[in-house]
Length: 102
Image (cartoon, rainbow, N blue to C red; front, side):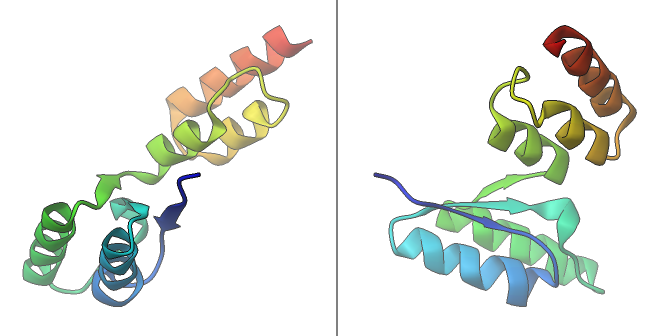
């Protein structure tokens, strides 16, 4: 069985890069939602992203990761997940999923 680790929130270095790089070093797949973490320095942001990429961390945005975690629009939670993702297309897909789920 493969274990995965999803990182989100806080600063890149403390809450995303270090835990994700450590997880990859332990043989886990690590995903980081880059728009859920940040820093006050653009240089630190760029370096953090490069370090994670070089270590094998999978970088994405939060909406894409939520949809991938969901895996199937037919799931009962699909409408709620798409509704919570703050993107117009996501709300539309959630409404369609809810309509076809009835």
